[in-house]
Structures are given as structure tokens and as C-alpha cells.
Amino acid sequence: MEETGIGREEHEEFRRRMEDEHKRINHRLEALEETIRQISVLAASVEKLALSEESMAKAQNRQEERLEELEGRDGEMWRKVSGYVLTAVIGIVLGYIFTRLGM
Image 1 (cartoon, helix red, strand yellow):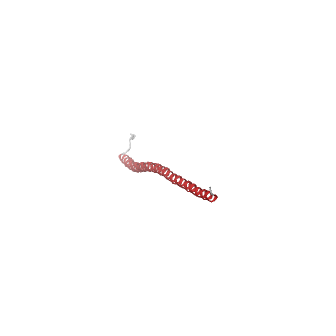
Image 2 (tube, rainbow, N blue to C red; image 1 turned 90 degrees about the vertical axis):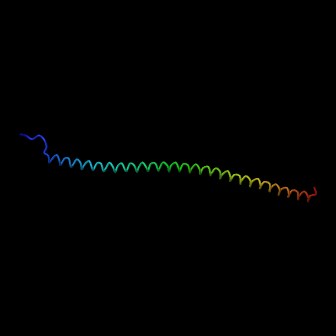
């Protein structure tokens, strides 16, 4: 009579190897899941960092605009004062000259 199936020992050996393979695969899947979780956390952190950087850039631009405005005010005020001083000096000089000429 010809034997068509496998023996009990062969079946047990096959089962043990399959269980070992399943454990190895499960271990690799757990490691991959942990890596994916870490990548997700990292991606969320990068997104928060990008938003924070964008916010800081906007704030810096606003501060630059305010600084330029303040610097412009000081320059404008200095030009006015210089103009008044120059006008006064010219007036004094002309007044002195006209006084000396007897006008």
C-alpha cells in the first residue's frame, strides 16, 4: 500500500517551523509599526516647527516694518530740524549783512 500523506513527525516539524516563521514575521511587523509611529511623530513635529517658523517670520517682517517706520520718523524729524537751523543761520547772516550795509 502506498502512503499518500505525511507522517506525524514531519507535520510537527512543519508546524514548529511555521510558528517560528510567524514569530519572526510578527517581530518584524512590530518593529515596522514602531518605526512608522516614530516617523508620524517626527512628521507632526516638523509640521509644528514649520508653522512656528512661519509665524516667527511674519512677526519679524512686522517688526522690520515698524523699525523702518520709526527710523523714517527720526530721519524726517532730523531733516526738519536741520532745515529750521539752516533757515535761522541764513536769516542771521543776511540780517547781519543788511545791518552792516545800513538797510
